[in-house]
Length: 329
Image (cartoon, rainbow, N blue to C red; front, side, top):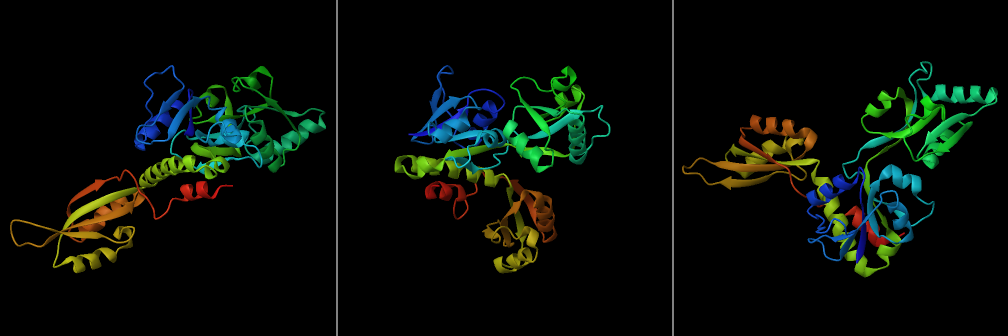
């Protein structure tokens, strides 16, 4: 069985289950006290509900084959040269950013350059800039990359926002999605202070999956469904009835406009009417950002009764995620 780790609680739990359901691979868990479940539409997969902080290591060590985590948490816990890696980025939920946050009373500190200068001043006075964080590895790499060479990291698992007010740290790096908690505790972000922008991702152990044919088949089916669902969120199918002499003349009108030509071109079919009027149904697939452009262009060439739907899945000629799994490390 392919072992699929899903967060058992926390901010990722409900969104992860909702996402899988939207992908058509909903999790069935009749007993909420049981920490295993299955996916009825996907045979060969067993779901394990685990703490989201444990999932990266479980995938690394092969106790789970794939898992859903926040990208920030994975990057923090990823072992260099380890077997765990991101298979599909950007699942479309749990967006947040890990950022440097300083007291808003520090009116002269508005950028990372200012923070670098301040760390040097602290050093000259015989002290170190104190940084409280739940992400010491990511924070240390980011500070060093930005020239903040004199700082002491204070790992913490509790509420970080109160640390500057209590005097246990000068600044913090913490996750923020709306900024409400940060502002309530009189903190602010600074220019260039974003450590990493994060959202949920699918990680996997390619070494174990690629080397086990019984795991590879359900893993491929899983990532293909997720990838195709994610792809479809960026496109709409637009259909309009257009009157014209024949299919070829309508096709020429459509193809003259790149914004309504579709991915490969329009699909055109005769509409059978009660009279002899020649009507054709024209369907194109367009990017979400070009939707209104496409509707207006179809109107310009005589389109009426325009309907718009969003596809549930969009499978490309090949799945990049599935190919990466099959190749192994």
